[in-house]
Amino acid sequence: MIPIVLNVNDVNYEIMVNPGEMLLDTLRKIGFTSVKKSCDTGACGICSVLVDGKVIPSCSYFTMKIQNKKVITIDGVEEKAREIGQFLLDEGVDQCGFCTPGLIMSIIAMENELNEFTEKNIKHYLVGNICRCSGYEGQIRAIKNYLEVS
Amino acid sequence: MIIKDYILPNSLSEAYELLKNNKKAVIIAGGAYLRLQKREVSLAIDLENLGLDYIIEENKLLKIGAMTKLREIETNEYAINELNGMLSNMVKQIGGVQLRNIVTIGGSVCGKYNFSDILPSLIALNASLKFYKAGIMNICEFMENDLKSDILLEIIIDLNQNGMVKYFKSTYKEYSLINVAIARNKNGFNIAVGARPGKAKLAKLSSKILTTEKDIDKACEILLDELSFKTDFRASDKYRKALTKTLLLEAYKELV
Ligand SMILES: Cc1cc2nc3c(=O)[nH]c(=O)nc-3n(C[C@H](O)[C@H](O)[C@H](O)COP(=O)(O)OP(=O)(O)OC[C@H]3O[C@@H](n4cnc5c(N)ncnc54)[C@H](O)[C@@H]3O)c2cc1C
Image 1 (tube, rainbow over the protein chains, first blue to last red):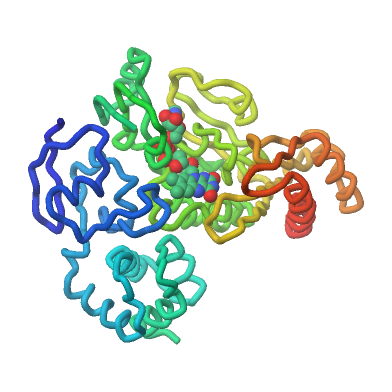
Image 2: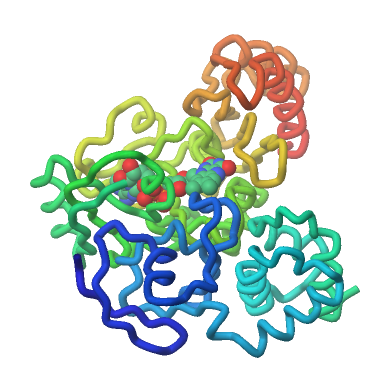
């Protein structure tokens, strides 16, 4: 085990990790169970968190890389998550809810990164967030409503 | 993957010494592909802290640090504006934005993946690779040889040429069923095809005979003969050949 300092949502955690541990497992171990595990190969987007503002699949990111970086999970953006969540609810695309935290983190990253929100841009940015309740049309409507684009 | 020890060296010389002195050590770039392998690693040497994350242009040469993430390439002004956007296009359907914020160009080159969307373009563009020990090596030479205890530092691309890449994916971010890259420099054309599914290769004969549009059918015929196409669970060899023909024609037309 190796001692590290992990900064999550602006709080420092002094913890011991296995050398090959992935950020997703570390986050869940210290209580951030809002970060869900699904494909565990970097393909589904469900475990998305922000590292220094960039959205990444935490399942595919070695925890050892994280020193001096800042992690934000959905717990750290509660107000914004509620706001986006309401738009998803309004379109009835929360459904089982398992992919929602990861999707919301990606929407937040997209909002910060892109200048223009065309349907093409939105789809290109969010194609890495998979939903198995088949909510894509509704999701796009909800996201456009949230971003106030037609 | 089981890792016994994990080090993030602060200098290249330290990274190289660790690599040279530990036969079972492995270099970690993004780590996204490596972690999927079932193996035990005595020492992981992570290149994150070595300042290899950059894209700079110098006298019409584009230098991309090995640890540059694919998303940075996708959104880089040179990658978008030079070479018909070929460098941005080659990476933009590799996984989602999330994955591209992790995976690196260095890992994509050194992995020599059969499905690579990156190698065909770099081969067509005749990229040079800069290694810590071996120095500068042409990408085709690298593809033919094993990488022995060395660290890729940089990928160098001559912007005094033109390029185009076309690939076909059954869904937006699936692995490509075929990837066709073409570049034109002062000496003529270079065509490379990957995900056939074998390792990306330069189609030497077909590149040589291509001079004007009237040669394109012939060039394509020769290409289908000189490179191997295989059937796997993603597509048949026949389907891949048909796609190659269409994509090469499209790429050529858009290029010239
Ligand atoms: C879910 C998923 C989907 C993908 N889809 C595609 C796709 O559609 N198309 C595509 O082209 N690719 C795809 N990839 C591959 C991806 O683009 C990267 O090429 C791959 O993840 C390797 O990059 P990495 O930074 O993760 O490297 P790592 O996994 O860290 O390393 C890969 C290999 O290269 C070695 N290495 C890395 N850097 C260096 C260096 N500087 N010097 C010497 N050796 C080095 C490592 O030791 C290792 O053997 C996908 C990957 C995943 C996980």
